[in-house]
Image 1 (cartoon, chains in turn cyan, brown):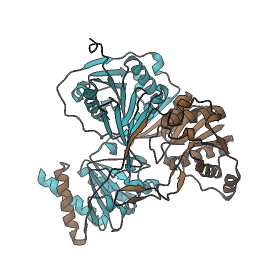
Image 2: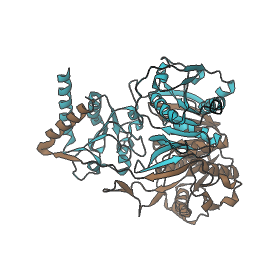
Image 3: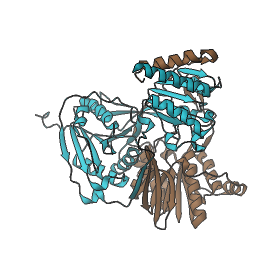
Amino acid sequence: MEKENRVIPRILVISEVKKNHILPVTFELAGKAAELARKIEGAVDVLLFYDRLDEPVDSLFQAGADRALLVEDSRLGLFNQEIAVKIGLEVLRRYPAQIVLAAATTSGRTFLPAMAAILHTGLTADCTGLDIEPETGLLLQTRPAIGGNVMATIKTPTHRPQMATVRPRTFPKPVPVQRKGAVEQLELPESCFSSKIVPLSHERISDDYTNIQDLDVVVTGGKGLKKPENFALLEKLAKLLGGGVGATRPTVEAKWIDYPHQVGLSGKVVSPKFYLAAGVSGAVQHLAGMQTAEFIVAINKDPEAGIFKIADIGLCGDLFEILPELIAALEKERGEGR
Amino acid sequence: MRIAVLMKQVPDTDDVKLDEEKGTMIREGIGAVINPLDLHAIEAGRQFVEQDGGTLSVFSMGPPQTEESLREAIAMGAHTATLLTDRKFGGADTWATARTLCEILKLEGPFDLILAGEKATDGETGQVGPEVAAMLGIPFSTYVSAIEKKSDGVIVTRTVEDGYETQFLPFPCLLTVLNNLNQPGMPTLAGKKRGHSATLKIVKAADLSIPEDELGLIGSPTRVSKVFYPKIQRKCEVYTLSDIRTGIERIVRELKNRALL
């Protein structure tokens, strides 16, 4: 009898819609949440708020969600952290959750801390591992500190919900499973949409720009490129591999390339399948932003460069000779593959 | 215009060397500095005060040696510096840190504008700023790379994954800033003297009306249950001169194996 009255513990994934599509990290989070839910015999809700969505939400269920909570409003076109916080809190009030997860994006890392402050609960940033402690049912949140040189496992023993942000691409995209879920279109009070903040614009760098944190391949240039124009070599290489271009802090500070490309402690932390660093010496502040990549190639003329110490393959020589040769080899491969 | 900057003292990561065997950071003998992004917050505050008058106050919670960084902030142009230091503040997570900072800001405030670095290089959470704003109940923005001051508020540019967002926030508000916001200047000799001779305000737990169970480790909703040092072991195969071609072939093979080509 008691078992029947048991309240099903819920995990709420708060995610994002970008360019009218569900952000890929949503599926990664839904898949991980489903895995956690099995361990606590719980269920997974995914909350999305947007002004327009051009894809069906069935894919959320196939990734592991049990229910989609949708908030659609014309005022949600531009990101407004104050409104995001209000929506998140209102949804949690209606659908209490034991665990709340959001992507560690510039949005998630903005609204989730404010929610945690108001809810008086713990929040762990940038988790790279999530699990359930068998004895207690508590969420175990593992995160890197000092750029991955130290890992800490963190718990929120008594406060609820247990909250965490997770970097995109931390968890694999789940293999879709045929299953259905419930869709709820939420009507929220007007107060949820009022804000002192006035969003004015969102200017995309270019239409095909993708966040380098979302890519399997990142090729990065440092001051060894000598001139801003030489980033073109890396762009060519990145394009061949379907990847993106990264940059070191000195190149960004010299205004050779925009800040969103910066990899390192003061920029983005990336963990692609393949990382190539050309003309990068390997300052700790840079290494901390990429050393968890699966495979690392370094090209540098200085055999003592620190970057070689954390690389799988090092090409010691002139990058202006090596990069064109590498590009030619890749082009040849692609040509033969066709 | 009253401006507050929240700053943190962190280990100097530019100094940091890796222990090659263990793959961990060698922390002994590493200097402590103002968190790099906080320097940009201080510089932004200094510029606003220089243009329009007002006061710039810096706040930091940390061990007694944080005093040195606060003096440096005064050298850079801050008018007053407050050090929150007490064993009872120790072990605070982001919630408890924000709770304490929120209290001192109420006590010393109100401030029109509160600035902080987007994140600190040691903890890297970026949470304290938004948490403080939420506790104070004021609007806030993050990842700010440009600030245009208006009479009643600020227009900020946020650097986000795919580009730039602009937002208007009325005063009072809190902003966490990125390093491309400005170029912090070096302290002048006069500034250094000011920093050296300034009287810092020292705040203890007893000076704040915060219940004990909301302070420091006791007041922290999160607990660190385990700390470990991941070993990143890579055997770098180095190719040079005539071997470069072999190296490139290895790379091509690796890309194929990983289905990336």
